[in-house]
Image (tube, rainbow, N blue to C red; front, side, top):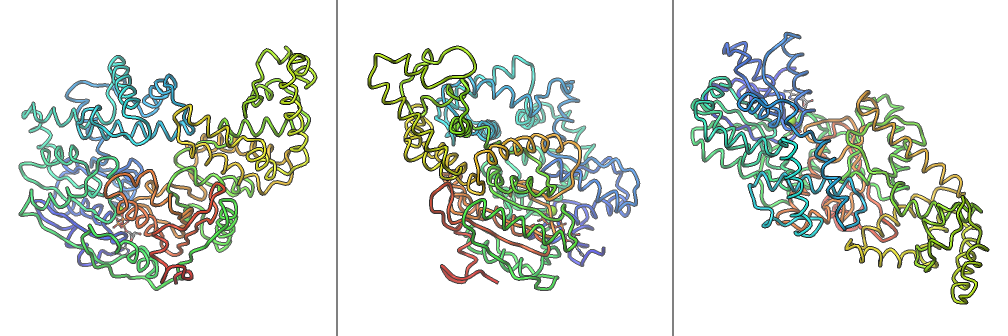
Length: 618
Ligand code: ATP
Ligand code: MG
């Protein structure tokens, strides 16, 4: 592959700072790799003097492979890594830290899980909650803010503070530092010890940074210190793809770079080599709605390609069926699974799709694990009801649901042993007339449920038996947003729809939970199959075919994210990143019913339609 003139000029930039600002697919990453080659071969820079920083470990691996291919397999001692990896290297050396002093992400989650389980609040999706808390702790540390001043997104400030303090004391007790401490410690180290700083400055004489738009202030300050006094700092980025503001990244730093280094060379790459022209055109149509951006020219290289297709679907199951059929079509056309990606805003959006892929035995790969809907307490309630309706009389099932909704049945009313009969309950309450009515009603409801298909059964449970009202009250007593529980109930109701019998549905739940477990193991081993990725995780990657699902209001833009200022634009950039991953085919789908309620297409989808309510763009 030959670089174009602008790419060549960038790769062969001489000494001093340089900022390459360019759109997606324009060869920024490719240029970085070629610049490394150029520095080594043409400028006789020693590979050890080169430091390349990428945003994720995955991206660092990819880049290493690309460089290796370019250098015809020669082993090179170029340092390539993430900010964290590099800072760890520096701290390790200065403080004689060993791996035992680094709090791994798993340990961190283990600690947080422990702390959170001691909290009063009941949480639906523990994984999501922990992730949120971990992110917020990171932001706090990177901003060097006091926890008391912090506005957390998913719990009260008080709860957050107490989790934070406990976490910090556990961490210190274990004599460990976490990834975010590393950045701050590194900064402090360089400030305090100019002698050490000097040694690292002499080691890394050339610094190259990919995805510069997602840098945060502490990272930026450390990089600047490291790059002095020669300032051989080569940064590439795209302000339109800045998507980590919620984590403290600040796109303004790109422009500050130009102020901090007035002598910096500025370059633009303006040809998109990745995507068919239609894809680029539509992506620009969306991002053009952002006000805070640096207008870039983007030319295309590829033919128009197939028109963009926006598909309206009924609900998640219907959508998943559509997506599976599209995936099958592409696979039959010879596109390998790894070149097909399904992108979504949050993991739970992929639940229906993952279920259908399991059913159809289409291999897929998810880098991050998804919380299992069927392990939620609401799913457990429903399963218990269905088993009781089917004639099961397990004590455990009784215990699970006898007071959901509240019936004032006491634990003692259940006889010892594995099974329970309604007669036992009646006997226990023989002197209480009003309890007899409750027990009759309970038994009657189970008889009604017995005759129903799963979907109708969930609706009956929800409306006629008062389970929905029970959940509302329960949520309030736990200081949880009722919508959290109602969404789960809605998802379960939807997922029941394709099943004709209770047994089928229960079997599917088991199969699904099993597949998800296997999937978690597989993540370590093999990496083949259709990609299921969050939009955030898709950054920097490219695929032949991209399907964006659940492009709905509330999802993208994500309603929880919208609370912050500037969030709508960040969400739009995220949508733009997702669209621009596609090389040949891009499909966008949205649902009209979500969790039992009407849902409307994302405002970004509306921006793609020629006029409101218009037909699919193309
Ligand atoms: P992103 O902003 O999404 O990270 P990028 O600017 O880093 O994109 P690359 O990933 O480097 O873009 O390149 C996108 C695709 O275009 C790659 O498949 C790359 O091989 C191809 N490409 C880049 N430049 C050229 C070129 N001059 N000739 C042919 N193909 C090119
Ligand atoms: Mg790139």
